[in-house]
Amino acid sequence: MAQKTGIPKGTRDFGPIEMERRNYIFSTITQVYQRYGFKQIETPAMENLTTLLGKYGEEGDKLLFKILNSGDFLSKIPQPSQDLDSVKMAPFIAEKGLRYDLTVPFARFVVQHQNELNFPFKRFQIQPVWRADRPQKGRYREFYQCDSDIIGSTSLLNEAELVHIIDDVFIALNIPVVIRINNRKILAGIAEKMGASDKLIELTVLLDKIDKIGITKVMEEVEALGLTNESLTLLTEVHKLSGLSIVEKLGSLERLIGTTTEGEKGIAELRELFDYLQEMEIENEIAIDLTLARGLNYYTGAIFEVVSKEVQMGSICGGGRYDDLTGIFGLNNMSGVGISFGADRIYDVLIEMDGFGSTTNQSTKVLLINFGKKESKIALKLAEILRKNGISTEVFPEDAKLKKQMNYADKNNIPYVIMAGADEIAKQVYQLKNMTTGEQFQLNQNDLITTLQ
RNA sequence: GUAGUUGUAGCUCAGCCGGUUAGAGCAUCGGAUUGUGGUUCCGAGGGUCGUGGGUUCGAGUCCCAUCUACUACCCCA
Image 1 (spheres, rainbow, N blue to C red):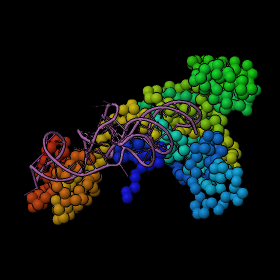
Image 2 (cartoon, rainbow, N blue to C red):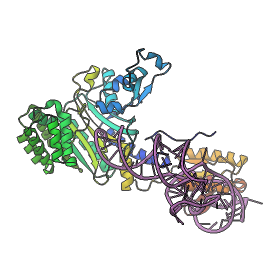
Image 3 (cartoon, rainbow, N blue to C red):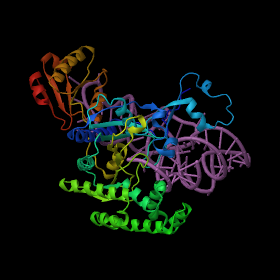
Image 4 (cartoon, rainbow, N blue to C red):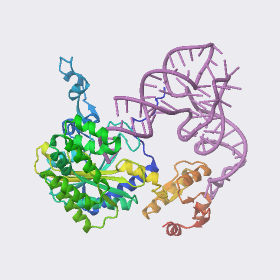
């Protein structure tokens, strides 16, 4: 009985045309990274769960793919297993998981290889990550991230460089974007001003929600959190800033939270970053977005997010600074900052924009027709010579009908076909057919090579 | 985790109020054309109508469950 084919939810196969397009994205990003001196690394698809758990918040832990232990994994579950639910049982039956992003494995890598690395260390990494999320538009369970990070330097020049890289990549890909920037210290300053530093995450979510659910509902939630009326006032003040320019925003923030220790630092950092950016030629739009709370779990300073101006899609690039990610693994004072391009979403954006142009899917230049055992040996020899001359060549493997062989060349966009049957062999010539014009010439070997080159 | 939409040939989709043998285009294969593709003509193969139950004399069509894909929320690249 034939098995039904299929692949797991949220995963995809990539055919030749898709791969050509994906490789175009990967190589564009790689070229930019290399131009800035980043060095490539790879890490395993799976990590120990202890490395992964607790780094992405409660929600993140749920979205981790866990790998069942090998062997008799059930024997390790403690005997009085009455009150063990799935969550509690998980650590006993799974000790490995698929990586959720590339940043945490990178932090692990840095700690583990700290003596071999030369700091500040600039690395890039292009690999798939997995999330047990519910798939929808632009959301997959297996997708590629293209990360670059600079670790071992607190300089804001790094932030500026990453913004420039983002700009370079999207210029190269011809995708107009908005680069949104925020700073977690500003968010912390707001919370500090409210006397609710411990509720930072809730506050940022609320700030983001004002547009979505309205001020009155947010007010209720503010009360539910046990915050004062002044807090709500501050929140609405901050929300009102959304229409202002960068300079105006910074000025207003100064008045609102400039007196808080964290807020002051955050504003200073943003000012310095924009100071650097002014010296650079950034073509895409840059905006301060105070509702940006990306990855609050380990980000401590700058936060980045990039969205397409033309296509409705989630963020296609994100990142930020993390002061102490390596601290969890025992290495302190190792601040890093990084960004990550979402290759699959960029692919989807380019498809919607019709931004791939005409992908020719042309790799083979010439197909040698197979006329039978004896003739194919001559074709093999010719193929060898052509390939040595840098001409990508295929020999049709079957002694099939000409119609079929020509059809194969046509469908694969192979521009030339060479026929060498009994007649040509006797005359020591080759029949070269141009598949676009339909013209045919009898050529000797040297002329053949020069024509094809 | 919550909600809505969806599923018919390899692909894109028709299929009326439930009615007897489920169709088309594209793709594939063969022929017209024994050494000449992309056009044309002729023909063929290909289906457990997502899966499992139920209602009915009768279900691709109606009901329930389940799975998949899509969409929104949450969260995110």
